[in-house]
Image (spheres, rainbow, N blue to C red):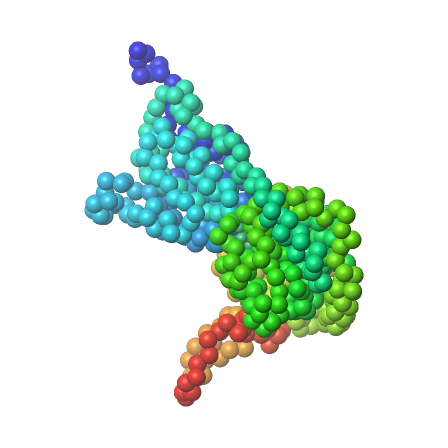
Length: 568
Ligand code: ADP
Ligand code: MG
């Protein structure tokens, strides 16, 4: 046997890096610290792009959106206990949204944690992560790193995508083994997200319903956007002449200006359609659970649902024609069956178009006002033109009014260009998504942020400057949450929903070497965004919005519980 000094060795650090690289993972988002500081350093020196953030939640959101954009799991790397918990919020959000992501956290020593003897950052992270993600694994032996990483990747991207937790105790990183043996222990995952072909009967059942429909409707969800079945979807919609309604992150699979888009006639089509085909969209709260006053009379509408997750069927109401399959395979099978069909009744599309044109015409004058103070409509009118002229830019969007109104007003022209608050309607995804989108695509990013929403991830403007990313942030600054007008009835403190009046968020960007701009009119806003997009320089535009312009909770004010008690 060769003496130890001559034997080629590898260790836990390098096996983790080699396992990720072997599986095509080229970027890690994270925050360094004990015990993963060297893992990040070594990964960078081995050619992996390591993007270090200021807070783990933002790194996790970047990883999650990387997963959505690329169909490869986005990787987030954190320290133990608090860092892990910060990242866990993003992991849970990724799971809820069906984005593939792997949270890798360093952890403390098992022997001490399990006896609860009070280790540095002691926490049973595996147990805590488990209910909040799709799968959770821990690796104790260097020789198992290859399998552990392979299992994490497969769990994240196969079937319904989601978040996976991988627990790596500190001691693992320093464990050594023979280098050649280590290399043999790595696993390259073959066919990580296998096609799921629909049963022919399921496809026939759906086609029969569609052909008998007088008022069919296709609803595209972010699962459709994720699947990247752009061509199959477009061809199905255009061949059948069925109007389509995109959910917010599905906007742009077909352009919002497409003659069959029912975006601006949403209320009409949800109420009147007789057969509704859901493509990668869940009948959750965002679609009023498929029932109630948003929809037609109970039982009057039949549903077809294409989803990779069998248990999604009948989750809220009866699904008459479930197609359990991946969207690409399902759309291909449907396209093969609708060849000779003349398509949906033309009168239906005409009714939808008429309503749509009327709604668009009603909105138009509000988008063209060019004066100070701006309201949401006049500011968004300016941004709408920018996306029209730069359709390959990525729009990140969060806030209350800023979100709801931007979703309706800004037309999207290409798939996977609109990234927003998703299934939870959560605030705080802004800068994480912006960084992830810029890093993964190299395209310019326009982040349209409510002033409150921005606050959850605002420190990452330093990250954006440090990596010199082409991100332009527009803050709709109306001095507060929903509105900037709340006051304390007792006159002691500021109202609970207001911020410092007339704050200058643009100065934050200047502090880190980026470009800060303060604007008060739509023309100034347009000029500043265009300059940012032309230069590619990190830019933050403080867009002053009338503090009285917003409405409580945007479009979802009805979700606020009401007190019946009247007290002075
Ligand atoms: P939206 O909020 O846009 O309506 P949801 O997140 O509610 O979208 O729904 C997305 C659905 O898409 C999920 O039920 C998920 O299982 C499904 N899905 C994700 N990827 C695929 C895929 N490749 N093929 C089929 N279904 C998918
Ligand atoms: Mg606000």
